[in-house]
Image (cartoon, rainbow, N blue to C red; front, side, top):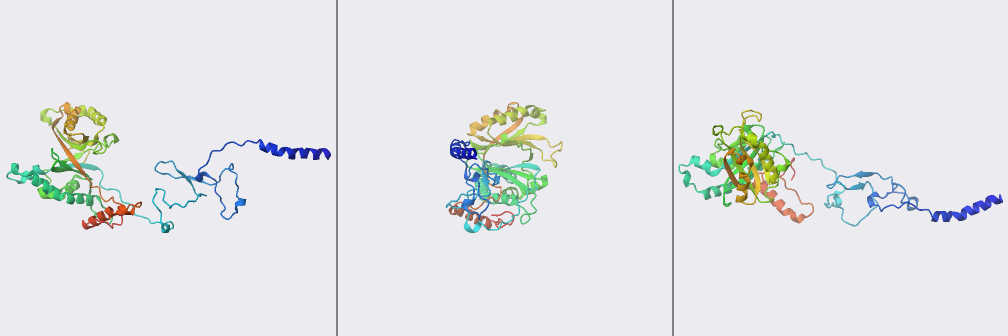
Length: 385
């Protein structure tokens, strides 16, 4: 017994020495959302563990944010006096934290996709058809007449593009874009070009005939308006922003006829043509123009030209760009026309309240009031303001 008591005394004396020389592995500082949180809200502080080396049992969830790099815990011991905000930085009012969620009806997908058509509306060419003195037409009068109808044209396109169960349910075409064509001196408008998407040629031409500008120019007759099926090349390398570097410019090129011996020239230079456009890093949109047959796979829907939207530093730069196209050098085109253009916003209703700064909502309110005046469905239940 004496020997056992002596051994126990030695262990008691050595215990603090052993503890003093015990080295724990270094642990990096942890952010608040990785710290272990209490699972018992009613337990006292003394009953909670303070061991920073004990693995946390709090479940961690990945939250997919814009940068895909944020994590957060279902609980947190971090408190702050700062204003409560959403994950996107929008302030949350006190009475909104417990408000019930509201189920919104999603905006329906377009039912008109499948075929894209392009129409070129040139004012002087159309006006001269109904005038005995075509050369005597005043270009400034035509410009002013078009400007008067621009607002009505834009609203016509926007209303055409907005349809659902509560508004414009019979719409059978979408107007993808509409561009004002400018004169060479860039001081007048001389026409516009529209891209229309629809399931049939008839629906697309019907929308074109109801365009307010076409109504004034031809009374709704579209027989003399150049109209083509457009096979848009939807590759990301041919989708540069218009106006980012230079002025948005349009090339309307028509092929030589078979009688002129064009032969298979389009196919022979198509690869070089496409490579040239991609390497230029300036193309906004492009694609060949085809005859507007009823079906896109109709063998008689032959390519007859090209439409290229691109950025150019000036008129000389634009001319140099199109003349150095391998298709142009090979002699494919019978005519090449270049125009500078202005893009018009015809996409529809995309105006939302500024949740971060109420002072910036006045323009939004003014827009809503104006659109309501124009007969636009600002209180539409499926496309919320």
